Amino acid sequence: MRGIANKGLLPEDALRLGLAASRAFGGTILIGRDTRLSGDMLACALCAGAASGGAEVVDLGVLPTPGVAALAPRLEATAAGVVSASHNPYPDNGIKFFSGEGRKLSPGKEREIEDLIADDITRPTGNGIGRVEVLDDAAQMYAEWVLGRLRPSAEGVKVLLDCANGAAYEAAPLVFGEVGADLTLTGTWPTGTNINDGCGSTHVEELDASGQDVAFAFDGDADRVLAVDERGNVVDGDRIIAILARDKKERGALSGEVVVTVMSNLGFFKAMEAMEIPYEVTNVGDRHVAEAMDRLGASLGGEQSGHVILSEHVTTGDGIVTALALLDVMVRSGRPLSELAGAMEVYPQTLINVRVEEPGAAKAVAASEAVGLAVSEAEKRLGDDGRVLLRPSGTEPVVRVMVEHSDETVCREVCEEVSRAVADAGKEGT
Image (cartoon, rainbow, N blue to C red; front, side, top):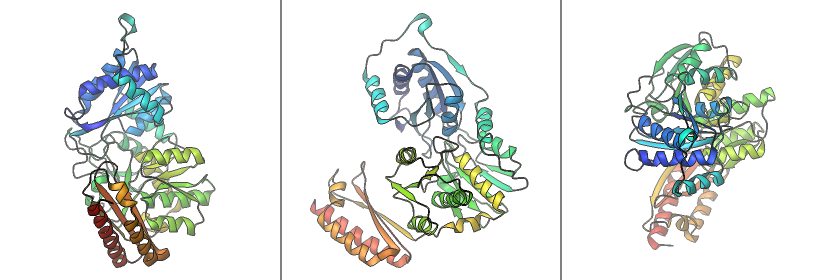
């Protein structure tokens, strides 16, 4: 569930979802949230709904999304819910659930919960009603859990943390303080209305990392992280994954293919081929990455956005764990991040969103014969040094045209040519 709080997402919706979750899971359900103003309202409603259905509820308070997932098996929960809209602005909010193992739910389980929301569920009375327990030290428990998996010795390393005024504001400083880093903090004063506001991974270009060895910028619920090197250059998810993949291969710790999405930069794929590291490409979305990693037994995967999964440590994307893993490579190698980021070359990329006139026609336009011919011609011109990617939107009358090439001018020209073909096909309704 996601929407504008108190408009598209009501406390009544959260209560019904909590009630449905109590029927779908039973037992103990954890509930965590980020720092946005509506989080208290929706989390209270979600807790009330689950308790109304007879579940025992543990209110974790403000905690990163991956922290809620991590504590689920530790606290022997049957499920864990998170109230967060991640990197979205503060008026938005959302609710999602993890299994008791801290993994994303299967589509079948999600459909079961959706069906239960619509049902008239009989509620227990008397001692059948569940309790709501508040866990005051959830952030400390999560920090200890993280440090039990990764604990680089970072004495004297100058680290800037941008916690986006979000869910990482307490846990991230706890973790990095324990590894000895010389910490500077920003985005650690949440007001309820300043989450992701000019800070965090969605505004990483504005982060001043002067005088730092590395800066880490989390998103609102801290399942993503981007880095800034000592020269002020942004290191995105593709480069983070490339650095970690190379390090794992050198240590013999890389299992399965590295899993990324179609939106990863062409330079990433070229780097993997040069290093003879196999990779798997999925559709956009961390769910697809996680499913492919499970299927392949992969130890590393993620997205350009900084949502990275290190399966030896976590079951879902975890910005704090990813940042620690990157810091660990820096410390062990003795190399600055700017040098490590040379693991891959970032190819110039041009993205144009082309609107089509007929709602719901984006997929048909992208698959049309005229567009297919335009793409074929474009691919001939790009050769082995570029690629074309068409992504029809499932929610908007838009076809996204992305072109990458080693030459920025060629990249832009080809993207414009293919975009014109898409626009013409959209006007014709083909």
